[in-house]
Image 1 (cartoon, rainbow, N blue to C red):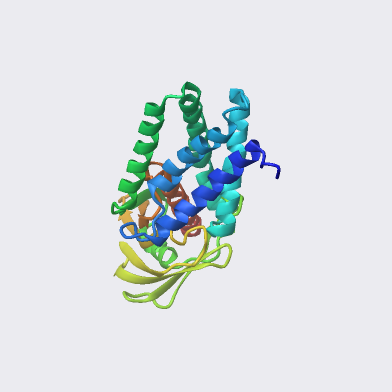
Image 2: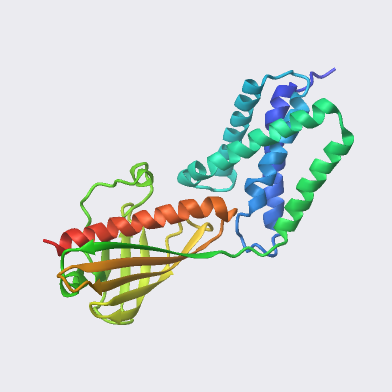
Length: 301
């Protein structure tokens, strides 16, 4: 007789194969989410992976510490497969990893309770609930827009600041934000084709990526608003977030200082929002502050 595959190995192989297949099938049949990565893919599927793993590990009498360790390995395999088969960027996988690990571990402990008690009613109820939530989430519409606003005070007049708001020379200050330090591109320079409404503008990032922009409001010394007309096809942002508009407002404080306000609008394509928008807001805010601090340095010279 052929030797059966070790149940420990099956606890790693089967959940990941099932997860990749479900994600692929969900994308193939997608109607409502328009390419968004939905709540179920980061919560329900990891829970389901943990439950499937325990089915194969149920006779191994794993201690809680071993179960957590095995589940983290399972999550690592899932992230690696996402990198290979789904084309996710490394930084995106770093961001998503706490969510994946947490719900795979949770699913494993739910599965341990289910299979230890051999309660078929409980087992059917839990699996049915996960299936219903997954289907309901998959066929629901997913849209989320947000605006992030930041402000700083600059010891200069609006007239002295304005030219540095429209376009600025290369930023030389070192990155302080931890995601920038580990490889996320940071804003470096802005160029403009003309100082007028309708002009083209480019925001150049540290890895050479360029956001193409069009000025839609040019109220000298007061308001610069621009639409993003093209963003880089980078795996870290493509399909995850669309930056739609940016804005700088200058408010004269009447005492030789100016309040500079930076606003950005974006559409988020990854869910659950309660988790991913924390990251989106943090990244957007640090892009703002890096640019605005540079404008402050240039204007106060």
